[in-house]
Image (cartoon, rainbow, N blue to C red):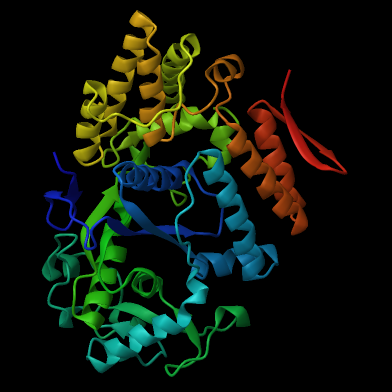
Length: 458
């Protein structure tokens, strides 16, 4: 069976065919880095980490772009509150994000563009939209997008203009000709630091959030690419506005497939910073080892809601231990996957049906049973190899079971690198935080003139 993806735009499962044979181009909206990443962010990054891992396991080359929003109202506000520059804040948060993703074995994207490096491209897009009559200069100095002049607006979210108008919350007096219009270029405001302002033909200012991703995706992947992804909360208005901007300027589809991962929920409410019910990745890692957290996220289908609780994480840890117990009894060998094997074929069928990780993990437990019954090295080797497609079961089994810590040597080494970078930047609070996080997972760091080494806590 060929790979099928649930496409948000068509609201249906669609056979996946990349534009270029053997090569997948994927853009995913990344972090607005004014604070530490929470477990909801981890869910998004993990979902598309599994997607790109499966593409690679399927023999495809992947160009995976996940951007960084490093200019935004919240970023400016937080930098001013802390009395530091925007660049100091965003550099600090990027180091922290990389440390968190490394701990969770989330592979780095191929490209990680920062919005502030693409302002020229953003201005070019805005200029093109103005020429085509889709953008106008407002009396307050902003440049806005004229939503009603783009015929396809609402096609991703399934919202009609009348429905959107009924729920409008923006006054026309805010410089907009229509309450549905959104800002492309924000004029400089009193009190904003000079580093948040760029000169342009539209006046000094900075880009709106939506135009950032339109510019970065087109600059890195082309005017049309295979997959655009992100959290379900971005479907409207962010991704809807990206379509209006990019397709309005370029006259062609932005992406052939749209993918959105489900929310993380706490007490039946979406986890978010605005609600105050969020848990940072590093806070969770103080209680649970990183591979347990990864397994907890991966075993739910990426489009489903994920219910966060200690009970669910405890259950995930026990389930993961059962898999590792099988690998501790029979030492696996490193070997390529034989996809004709019945277990491997079932795993592939599950993953080819919109990245069906729950069914794929059920196959892993069936394989573990085969290992336990027959002490089969072949089954143990396949179990580890298939687990690798999901980023799990790659640690030493006995060490995992004894310590409860899921960090492998590569992940620990990456955290040490991130800590060294933080110390070099004189961000000693972050360096100490990384050390404490590792200690909470049973890893003791030892600094010496020759560098930093580690050992398992006794």
